[in-house]
Every structure is written in structure tokens, then in C-alpha cells.
Image (cartoon, rainbow, N blue to C red; front, side, top):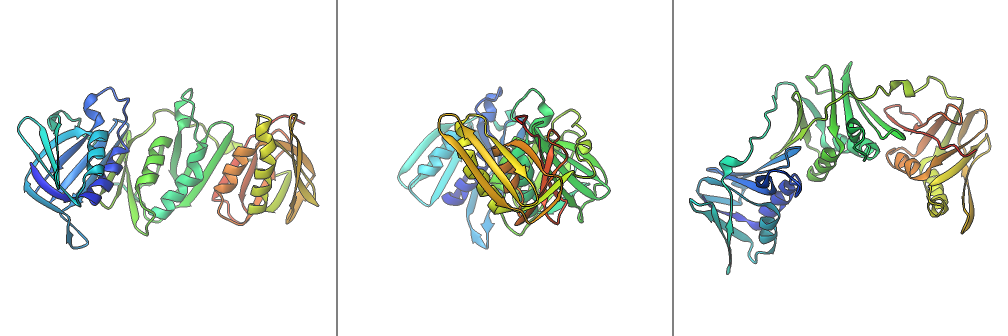
Length: 377
């Protein structure tokens, strides 16, 4: 094969492909990036068998020629090393050619690298995902869903299903749920462009985090397809394939009681910054615990560090119903939950001092954050 390509465009796409590659793979060929050169495009592939990324670079982008193909072919080149070479080349274009023994000659200006590659026929085939049933979402909405849920997945492998986000489609509504058993994030979305009536899958949190890094925050839409154990996200020139987690996600619907004993409306930013300040001492205490007491007049936050001292913060109450209460919580969990809510006003609903409490926008039930209290009182 032989081609010449604009180096900056090539490097951007290589870096995105590299995000699917893990150095801990059991298959040595998966540490490489597969290049497949066709008449008028290059297809780059990276995979760790959990996540696969396939990116197509066309000959023209915005009516400008960025790629010239002289000879078709394919090769697998060592991923990180190859990307480092391309990054450090001196000129704005790079030419790559290969011989029958899978050696690649990389030239740019007066720089010349000879790199040993591998037989592309030995590279595993990507999973096939049917494109018959589809969900189409605006990219901004998908990125928001990931931001509002993915932080709550578990980092412990003791319950693998909790390391992913549960995507459930029922009655035209997509519900995305993440929990590490100490907190829970739920985002609901009525679906308009979907040919999928019902689905219940678990997408790994790590895969969603990588997808979020790769897709640009544009006004485009993204198509999402599901197979038995794979999900395909398709946008522009990118195909992102993730393995789905096996197992049954716990039924979390029973965690949301019908009526709250106590409900407090506060300003999101003021509440967040008060917790942030109180958490300075909570972190020093080593447990991130903040105590909250609420009544009709005010919400008071307090924290103590035996070595440093105490802190008290008052937060203005915009609305209050029910009985006064005292409760303790993890400051990091609470701040993560408030960051996931875009609205200026939030409602905190309590169902008793030792039952999970929820935080949601004042006028919207489609974003719900649930936190388990800590027993201190």
C-alpha cells in the first residue's frame, strides 16, 4: 500500500482510535492500529475486544483533498509507537508505504522511519451489529445523559453489572440508571426517533466515558444500535462498538417512595458551594461526612475535624414542607449529584433519617439523584 495524508487530520483520528487500545490485552496484535487503505479512504481500527473504534478518513474533507492513495493495502502497526512517530514528524504531510513483509516506510520531509508491522488478516473481525432497529439522539443529549449518570457507576468488580449504566426502553421512554449501591443517578428521556420498542441492556461505564471523549459536542445526531451482546454508536465517520455487560441489573424502582416526609427547595449553586466549603473539614476528618439539619427557616450544614476545628454553613430555604430533620451524608456524593443537575433550583426530598433521599430539579422529574445517608446522629 502507499498513500500520502495531511498529518494533523491523520493524527487526530489516530488518537481517537488509540482510545480503544489497552496495553493489558492478551492478544498482542490488539496493541496495534489496523490501517486499511482503499481507493478513496482509509479505515483505522483499534480494539481491546471490549471496545472497538473504527474511523474512516475520506479523500476529501470540506472539499479539500487530505488523502492521496497510490496503492491499496492494509497493515497493523504498533499503536502508541506509531502515533508518537506521526505526532513528531516535521512536515504537514506524511507518506506511508508497505512491502510484502509488512514493513512500513514512514516519510515526512527529511524524516524517515522503518517500522515492522503485522499481518492484518490476523486482526480479529469486529463484532457485527444489525442496523435495523435504531435510537437517534442529538449528540448534546447523549453527552448530557453520560454526564448525569456515568459518575455513579461502581468502580468495584465485585458486582460487575454495577460497573455499567442500565439502559431501559419501555413505553417510549429511555431510562438510564447508574448506581454503586451508595448512590444512584437516573436520567429519563421520552424518545422521538426510535424504532426500538423495548430493550434492557447494561453499557460499561468505561466505554461510555471513552465515547464521550471522542464525540464532539456538535448539533449532529448519533445513531445507536443494539445486538445481543454489543452496542454500536454511529456518528459521522466514527463507529464505536462496545460489549454489553452480562447479568441482570437490580430493580431500582422500589427505591423511590411515593411521598416525602420532608421537602426542601434551595438554590443549586449556593447549596453546592456551601457543601464544598464544609467538605474542606470533612475531607480532613477522612470520611467526607457532612451533617445537615433542616427546618422551615434554614438548612444548616456542619462538619468537624478533631485536628482542625468545626465549620457551619447556612443555606437559604426557598420552600419547605413537612417536618424538620437531621441527616448526614457523603459530601462528594452530594456535590456530584448537584453538578449533574443543570437547573438553578433543586428540591431535596427526605423519607426519614436513615432512608435514601433524592435530589432533583424543582420542576422536572427526568433527572433524579439518590443518596444513601450515613448513620451519625
